[in-house]
Image (cartoon, rainbow, N blue to C red):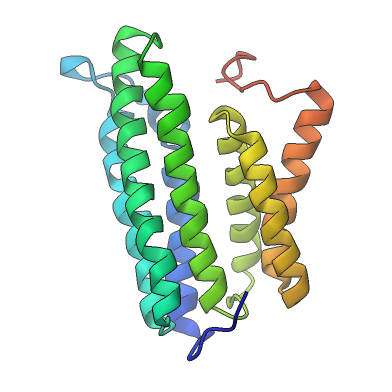
Length: 218
């Protein structure tokens, strides 16, 4: 990873990064958090409508962090496809998931929701995170940044398990962890160590990666 000219670590990037972390943690658990609210007319659910906010919150806070940290051209070239892929993947997932809730998880719902949608969605997220990691050195923040880092790491793991992308996420988290260790950034180390430990522990315990829904937990 190359250093970004003009990269900054100050209060403004810290606030945007905190917003990004909260948006990821809350937005990527909308189904679990809002799901109990039930359905609405037309076969949709409250969670479907609340989830419309997720890409605006996640992408908006990520772009705010990059702008306030004065990201260079190369960083924006990473962030740009990341935001597009993230929004597209989230939209595919949301639409297919909503249809699946009403009509069942048969073909081609499973393909668009669990496979295409999730790989695009999470792939876009990882590109945006790479842009953020590249430009903000080191990750700033007060005591609140530690639990937020841990929660984001745990969110990546839970999304990978329920979203059927554990191998992709484990590989990405290991790569990020190596960068964090080399940079001696303790918050980034914590974030991606939580992801790696949670996924590896889950896989070893179950001798595979069963989804929470398959176990009847959600």
